[in-house]
Image (cartoon, rainbow, N blue to C red; front, side, top):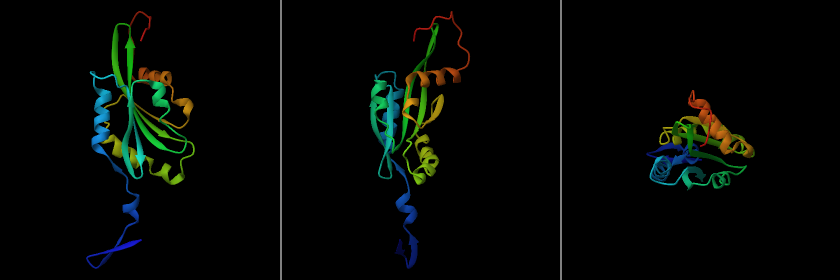
Length: 160
């Protein structure tokens, strides 16, 4: 596919495959999850054609899990409470979802598409790439955040 601009041939192939991001919707959802003044604990960013948009935000982790399907790529941002009984800290997790039925071409483009999202989603403690629904587990996420957080000092009693 070619187009003529200023008497020269210009390829449209790369222009039709280029991924874009809805910066405003992604930034609003990101800020909503990071805010201490809202109940929002997660946000999901998915593709609408060649554009990455904010798809959903919420507070119930069960709803977060339902946002990911086997033939799509998506990104998630999750708020996790960590620490011990003496010091509770809020940490954030960045999730890249790569469904098991995603095509080879879409798999190959994942890293460059993720770089677009990470221009906005910059502050997180842990980054995970998830490829099976079983890995979309709150305890798995919480353990990853705790491991990344270093030592936990306390009396050994944990109630988060």
